[in-house]
Length: 244
Image (cartoon, rainbow, N blue to C red):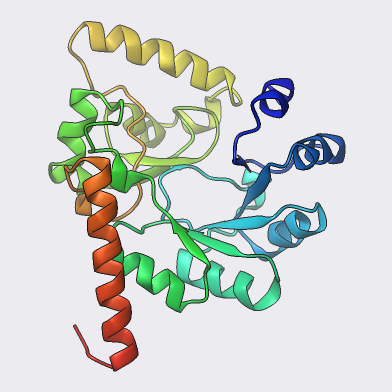
């Protein structure tokens, strides 16, 4: 994968679950690639800065998908607001706020907290360009989006998604018996594929952040335009002191 990245030279490479070796970081930097890495606490952010990374993704506990904690056993479960402020005040690198942000008002809030940018994922799942299947989309756009859970039963590492038949296994005593990542995740993907053939969509990895019910079914380009307009409006109201 490293050889491919150095050859293709994407604009950005973002690390999750910790950091690669110094040699790999150097190879990517020498290729002119901007490097980002996820931090879930201040110690991780400081390690990222010391490694020569260009920016930090501050992943709050509200975020959907896999937790980026270096060590899941010591996850401090900091929320997006607290984490963003901690990193902005203690690390000089640009901070990208992530977790629970679904609209332009949320982006504006992150910027007002001192973040240089915001990262959204769940907000784009309902877009027609995403590869989410029909079952995933239906749950995201229905009442199921009001209920997300953090679970390790799907992949072997903590991740937040919509509550479904798969996540329910975590409440049935399976959490401590799950193989490590990525062994469990490979098995889960095979199970999902087999279940879909039978018309069963409740055994998928329906990753989603808290606030998933704010998702909108819009083309990606249109959604970006809407987010930008909402952000500008929210920032304008904040600077003028107008309450909403």
